[in-house]
Length: 368
Ligand SMILES: Nc1ncnc2c1ncn2[C@@H]1O[C@H](COP(=O)(O)OP(=O)(O)OP(=O)(O)O)[C@@H](O)[C@H]1O
Ligand SMILES: [Mg+2]
Image (cartoon, rainbow, N blue to C red):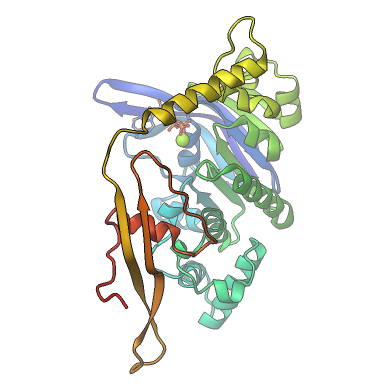
């Protein structure tokens, strides 16, 4: 479906020119996830940008051929290249914040993108948008679609970005570090979604990452890049299972085994000591550090009758705003050198109390 042959890209700057990509060939089939892996500066994003026709002005394709189906991507007019990017190739970036408009609801963003590409009534576009949200795994899509991006979690936001990329039924999606900003559990869910979409929609993915674990989890084939050159290429199982190139071998060796990740946070063991002794030494050090703060004679903190009210929504035009009481006449004292525990369920006011002490939130004036 996508064929890239002997692509070379050069960047010019005032010191001369650097070859960012040299002689790279990649092909992607429908429903296939092609991983592009390599260290920072290897040229991964540059390849993605070249395919999208989004190279910065200083960048120039000096050689190579790029074809999507029967279309030669290098000979397209700027207008045709623009249409192509919007319709047949989509791109997903690392940070969902930058791809979503914080001032528009999820619904409006999806509808806007859908209607930019297809003649649909707004009702049709809306039901398409709800269907997309369901497809990417947002529960209660019909009501959640009214939310703004900040009301979604990071993982949900990245799913919405993926839904936006799907709006035009693209043949190819280039995902540049799509899970790097997410925590590990959410990362796995987003990768699963990408895999599901590749299979069910027959869409090809180029998955750009520096993380060989991500490649191992979802990609069908992989290209290992370094300094703009292909080090090794082939089916993921073969390349990661029996790496031939010394660079791929080194990359694999640098991945910490799952069961040993914690060791990196331990103090180095002293010769002759048992593991228990090393743990004890670490605990002792932590205790010394904690105790060193005690008895410093700082001031005592007193909080008296602290009340914080937030304005709620108006139920009707003439109705007064309903106030939400986050803290209701809370008093406490913290003696210097002591630790006060603040515990309670979600929404009980713990962080509000901390913020009001730090002067990030104003206490309410009238204390009942
Ligand atoms: N706008 C630019 N101007 C000049 N040189 C650039 C520009 N963009 C990238 N380069 C150079 O091209 C090479 C490849 O960069 P690229 O961004 O493609 O790497 P990458 O593999 O995506 O790295 P990362 O993992 O850090 O995102 C680097 O040597 C980089 O300095
Ligand atoms: Mg990059």
